[in-house]
Image (tube, rainbow, N blue to C red; front, side):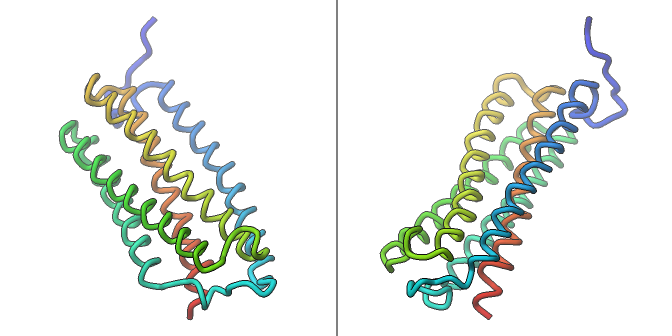
Length: 200
């Protein structure tokens, strides 16, 4: 028995199964919020425990953090443009803007890895202090999520190229866009409360 399709809705919402899947992903994002809230709380309680190690003033470089922020914020915008093309059934535009989004995301991961390497060379490791332990866990968890998102989105782009734009591929694309925007929001909190608040 074929699923009932409501063509009055956007492609990703046209079947009941798709609507349930999207709702389920919103619930999953709720669990992710709890995860990151816990990591922020841990960092907030340990942020002043330096144990004689490097402090944020000695480590953080605003220019480097701004580059990471610009890359991720821009990738969120390009992801939105990709969904705009999807809603207009423009497969080529969707794939093009998704690829641009992933390149920006990869640039973010590259700069974050280089940032971590720089910190380690400065003697700032997870074992140095409670501040650095909570810092690396929070940012490492976010960076891992971005890396997983890149791999996930690549698999969806391959499906789009092979199967075209269908309710199923549209749903998968929409869900990865929700995930990507969520990571962008988390980074805004990281930038504001972990970096900016310690550098002004």
